[in-house]
Length: 290
Image 1 (cartoon, helix red, strand yellow):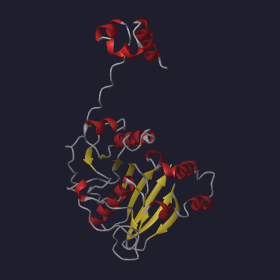
Image 2: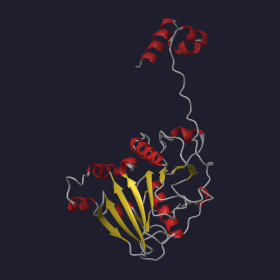
Image 3: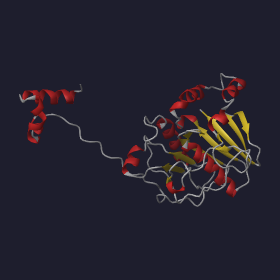
Image 4: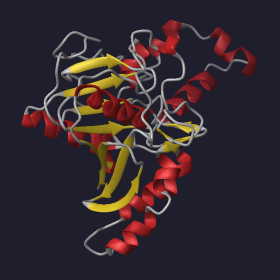
């Protein structure tokens, strides 16, 4: 029993009332006069303060902006990625690079659940599942938050954000595109906690490239590729998943599929090439690092 509860129990017993009547008979004046110290309720978190109007898309984004996806206790209950997210956001702010927050809930509760320390991004956009139409014509983007991975039963918002970043880049450019994913600033599904722990423990200074590649042997199939959504050809696999209900975000434009027929992907871990998949002309590098 904590101190407040014990104090209240002793106070009630001192009134010498029958057990069933103790709480019913006590008055506000008696509680105030008891000297019981009750902490005031915590104030609700204020809304974010983006530099640009809320839910307004930028007209253009320079190379390597930062997208923070659903960094909310509604999904990541323990705010497990907070330290990594805070460090990455602070670095981008210091470098003068744009920071975009994707929120699935812009109510008072949603703002209270949003846990990054910096509450003044350049852009604050609504995103039901990680979807976006950000103009990413330049060659690089960094995406953090969660959930990581996309497969049947676990469709990650962070991976949908990566899918849309890839799609939006190639709508404006034919040049290769890089998606950076710093693992310490990303949260995974509970079912994937073992894999996540293994990834965070990987050290290229002590593990050989062959040993690292073995960890990623089935990684694309396990975390990126799906076969339950439309693709450009019957034999292609999709990268991630699209937004499955347009009504969740009526202003969003889905665009064409991102799949292994239209794109060629190369996966890196701390600079080591660990997997290649897809045969299309559009070249994408996916860079994971600790």
